[in-house]
Amino acid sequence: MLKILTLIGARPQFIKSAAISRAIRGTFSDRLEEVIVHSGQHYDENMSSVFFEELTLPTPNHHFQLSARGHSDQTAEIIHQLEKIIDLENPKALLVYGDTNTTLAGALVASKNNIPLIHVEAGLRSYNKKMPEEINRILTDHCSSLLFCPSKTAVDNLKKEGIVHRDGPCNSDDPGVYLCGDVMYDNSLYFSDKVKEGTAGHLAQDSYTLFTLHRPSNTDDPDRLKAIYSCLCEFSETFEKHIIFPIHPRTKKAMMHALTEGEWNSFRNHKFINVVDPVSFHEMISLEKNCEFIITDSGGVQKEAYFFKKPCLILRSETEWVEIIDQGVALLVAPDFDDLSKKYQQLISKKLYFPELFGDGKSAEFICDKIVKEIQ
Ligand code: UD1
Ligand code: UDP
Image 1 (cartoon, rainbow, N blue to C red):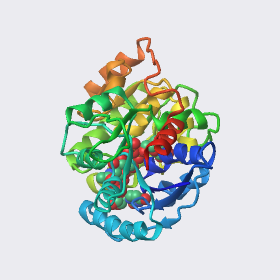
Image 2: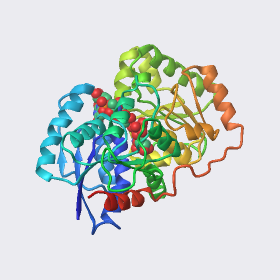
Image 3: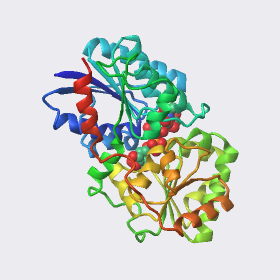
Image 4: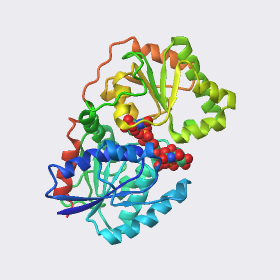
């Protein structure tokens, strides 16, 4: 039995880890043992425990409580607590997902303790180091012994930084680099018939826009956030389109700060805009499957738009998921009504094609197989 320690802590990581945990408990139950550590980065019921219940994730073996909320403090606290767990559990490898502060903390602890690091969702780059995730990704990839890339672009990005596949037992100098598809696609397929209606139950199929927002580049500048608010109101009123907006806690706090009380109240009571608390994954999938259109700055949501064959406007100046832009089904958009309405009309008026770009829905099995073969 190979004992691996999985470190997760933010909403998208709970979702991503469901696919690999499922494979470990299924096909690989005689070869892999998983110890799950929850870093405590996300902690609200609707940002954390709802996913463990709904995705039938095992209860974490260790669950940290963080007191700090700043980036450096948060990372340091996770490092501090994780190191003790490494001593206690003595795993053969540490598995991390994506690009959050939790991911970086895991990477540093693995590196300092000479434990092979497995990075799922390796090789993504925005080439914008102002984005906090970018440095997390770069450092994590450079600490990793096994790197699992969801796209060909990700493999190429790693190559540019000198991280290429080497045969033989992997280590951080001679890593294994694999194109494996996207574990989020595995999940979208697996859970697509387990959807839960709720928030949009009263709206006709393909009639509404789904909107999410949480990137600091959008939330932390009050002027930009106000521009996004005005743009959404104008868009929904002009096209008489309902917008469903499950609001991230960070964004809610930022909006309540950036908008006047009157603006915030009129936003929440807007006749076309439905601002709701974060929803569960089953409900999110239902919202994605049944909407007409998605506007988001989320990495995961822009890809799920693709999985469910929905056009998408990405409210950012760049994306790591360049394939979906190249495919012509998503566009970058500014917080500006003219840009938004022009690109919305452009995307809904043409026939869109969604060939399989993110694997075959069996990425988790592929990843577990390589872990068993490569970790000594
Ligand atoms: C983090 C990740 C981001 C990821 C996102 C997924 C980093 C640097 N960022 O961003 O890559 O896309 O998670 O959602 O790791 N908060 C709550 N309750 C919660 C969680 C957060 O109220 O359960 C509020 C707190 O005020 C907190 C703020 O949201 O300070 C930001 O949370 P944090 O985890 O630091 O960053 P995210 O914006 O969630
Ligand atoms: N998600 C969810 N409920 C919500 C918003 C998002 O279940 O209210 C899911 C979404 O379907 C996707 C993941 O959370 O699988 C994306 O996470 P998020 O947008 O927080 O982070 P990112 O992907 O940008 O890192």
